[in-house]
Length: 116
Image (cartoon, rainbow, N blue to C red; front, side, top):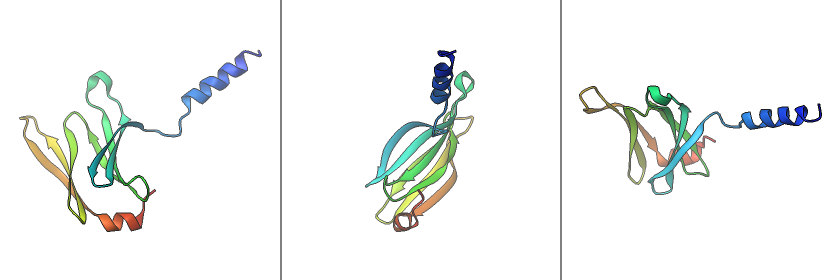
């Protein structure tokens, strides 16, 4: 009996997590602006994982960009002094790339709005 209680506690503690997403990577997309990529669903051998991306400066804001299937989609970023341009790109059956969604973020607004 003395051994069962600690084992149950350890199993519960090991399976409980503060985050439902698995961090995959962080990459710099602009000066002092990063994108964080998390896995939200793993398909294993049946296809690509579902991923989600957040735009952040690691201090004042963290904004959800969107979700995508890593097997045929991704986000690409372009920055200038005042804006961050984001395009969601998808590869069709023939292998051609096409933009299926786009967003523009004002860098000053991101800093003032926050998002954490």
